[in-house]
Image (tube, rainbow, N blue to C red; front, side, top):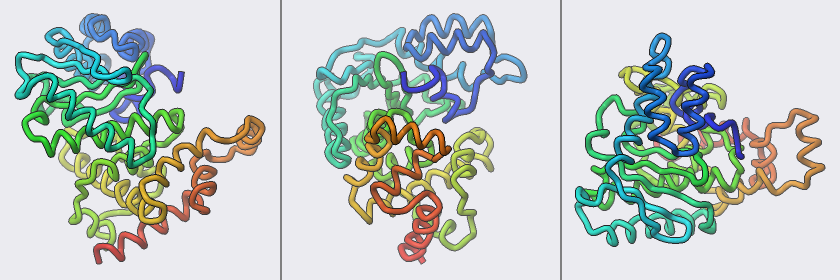
Length: 312
């Protein structure tokens, strides 16, 4: 088990209330028992001051999809879940598109498919403004990693490729780093894989019109309320800062270097890992120094300087 069973949702979308009832619900959720999770969540409601609303909406969206869907094995490592009657293409065409995009992401980062993955096409009725991750998200579940994508992405081949490249990159970083990669760096790799950067936002970050955040604040920015317009803008800037960090690293050692960086979390002898823990060393700092020769502080400084040369 890579982490606490319900750490992933709390890390990316905010905790749903760490009480005993929600722990039971999220135990179901992280084993992808979405029907049991939904029924249990319904009896609890949104919780105190609606602390469980984000979690409830995601559980509900996945439950509604599961209740109407068929799941089939596309390969030995990939299963696909979708409502076949609503697909704008043949099931076989959908599988080919998903496999092709996953292959592309894996080749760029030099990752071998293997860890079980489920790609779930969320129903159109779940694609609403209050659905967290409505444009696509990845969850560390058991016995597979689960990618959820909106049904609307199937109607545009470029959008579908972008979503899968980004979300499958999360599967890659999760498995190569054994869940140790921090959120800001995880998104950096995914933004490189998916592309689609906002150069206007990059110029704001490079010029100082938007703040260039330190590591802790950058990670925290992803936890802001995405339904609030001002906070949603801060989340978007966080993605763009992570993108700049990712593309800076890629400029140094290519996309393969990003894969080497993820492997840097897990390739130490046991004694080295033990000594790092005793010293309180930061795993990301150690992995960066192993692959690139500098640590987190130098990464943030170098990324900003690189960005300024790119857009100013």
